[in-house]
Length: 412
Ligand code: ADP
Ligand code: MG
Image 1 (cartoon, rainbow, N blue to C red):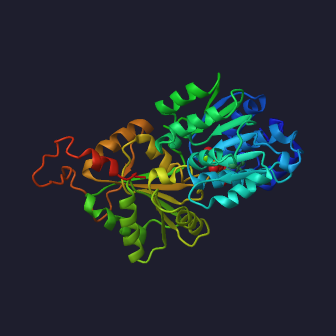
Image 2: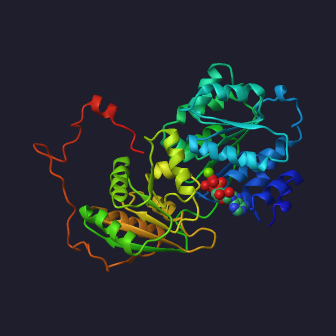
Image 3: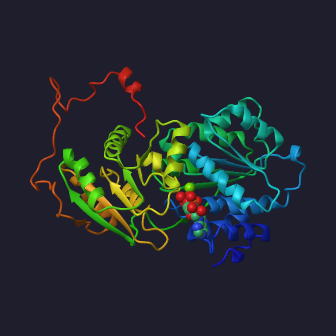
């Protein structure tokens, strides 16, 4: 199928051609016609399947006909909610690219950056607004943003949005828009809470699900290394010296783990950047840019921080920690081996992570090949290491005070 078959107009087709896209992705092929019909749509498909253009292109087409309103008379007709600043910026980049030959105006607003320039652009009038929830509500309260004319509302990366605790904000935003509107929901996964949200705010939606998340990319060669937990760093250095070359993404479960590994790799002379939820907006953008323009070839990230971020062309993915949710494994390794290229994944499994490997293999319905040729082999009979804390039983629950629980930082 071609983009022409999707009934997109010529200004859009021209911009698509300039983006270097030859044909729509499966997600786009299935989603675009329903959006053009004005239907509510739920699309779930893993990261990198082209979900942004699946809503951006039909939205631009839908509003192409009313684009000639004088600038100051422009009303926000499409509102796209995105959980993070990076993702919001990426979406805006997409809209800018595809709307090149239209007079539709878009802008992006997000927190953690000064508000005045955003207000300036909004006052000039836009047709399409991309926003993170907090900043949107803030500017709405200040009467800078008027949502009374929204005709299409998009919730992008809905699973991440809920993981980040934005459920109430999202519901509030939905209520601030007119009752009669088209709602589109995009998500990499469809956990129960996303279904629940969809049930409350979408009307008779068309459901599109592409490539069930259990199908691990066929073009990815997966290797499993059994290794004692304290030896993982050495194994990582060993593989970087001898085996793994090119651009790689290393996943760790916690931001503490990310930073520790980054320090070690930097000390060993590697060009490393890292990405996690506690970094400032400008640090994250800088890290991403360094990686994208090749100044660093290693990026270390937590799952939530890396989710949705468009990094392609990876040669390898390293699971420094094994994810406890099997779908996460599939998402991680799906970041390599894209676009017909072959990719590699390396998973480091310590004794306490063996059960995770079991459920991953159940999900992908295949055994991951075990690499035994390395200097830090785990004794197959090794038991998980238990970190004994003085004076307390590890089974004792509720030893944390409510106050200390509240202080707990976000882990992503
Ligand atoms: P998702 O939101 O599903 O994670 P994105 O919308 O970020 O995916 O797209 C992933 C990458 O695919 C981007 O680099 C985008 O430019 C590219 N892309 C999107 N549509 C096409 C297409 N039809 N042909 C080729 N590349 C595409
Ligand atoms: Mg996306």
